[in-house]
Image (cartoon, rainbow, N blue to C red; front, top):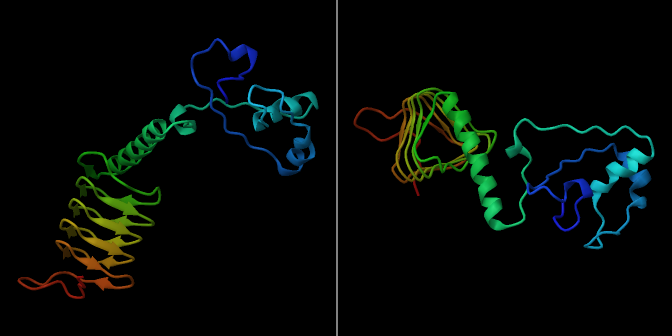
Length: 200
């Protein structure tokens, strides 16, 4: 909502107002032509649709969120970075609730990433795509894991890069290994190199 043209009842409030709007397509397009630009910015506001539907006696429902962080919006780069930090922390809390230990919570991730119990994820790790990490793993700093499956008890040493890889239980990868897509990487033999490991 624009701070320059809020509804009269909200003009004295100092808090920002954020909206998420959900419409049925046919009713929306049947009345969207009624929007006007009689506001400070001379712009069309989709939020005005609620008033148009109300005047037409259509059903309009307001729901209050239990977690304001889920509906935050941003007008500046600083606000955008603040929201980004909240989302990262929420994912870290989810992973830690599942049993992972994360040091320095600046973890880059995607929502579809999963980790099991007793796994330790060090700072500056990136978990991307549909990555799955088993239990009792150690993911060292600066590793980047994308769309990969990692078995239990795996150690990724610093700077390891995995892309669409499958790593068997107990394997030790790196440091600075690049595991190419579509390869299965088996457990390291005692005193030997990891079978199937490909390094750039």
